Length: 132
Image 1: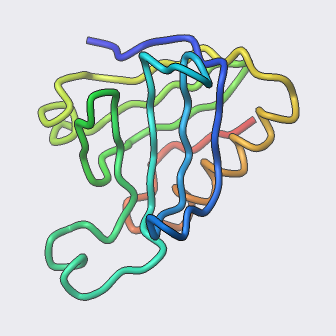
Image 2 (image 1 turned 45 degrees about the vertical axis):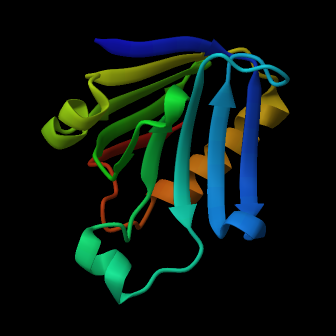
Image 3 (image 1 turned 135 degrees about the vertical axis):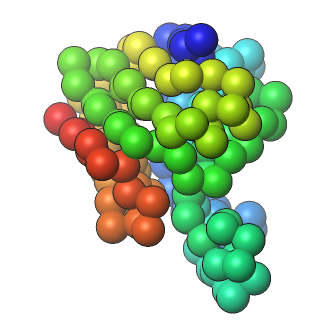
């Protein structure tokens, strides 16, 4: 199963009150029904490492969450496609994420920078990371 929707809103940045860096896509910026987030903690400790939480986490609408698990992330031609590993597929109950992006060039650049920030050089960096 593919988790798919059209995103008309994007939020990227540090949210110090939640101690998190966030990349979020929403179908509707004001009243979202579908949402996809990648979050990365601003602060990590030994317990995070022991629990495998010292990486980004994927959050779907409704709050289903999984740490790490992205094998491929491709942003190209107003489409974001993400492939998941077996563990993430089982936990999230989806095989992949596909988001059509109805965003202007400036918002696409913000998204590209945000994805690069949370995924590149992470211990669970995707084997394929293409952000055009």
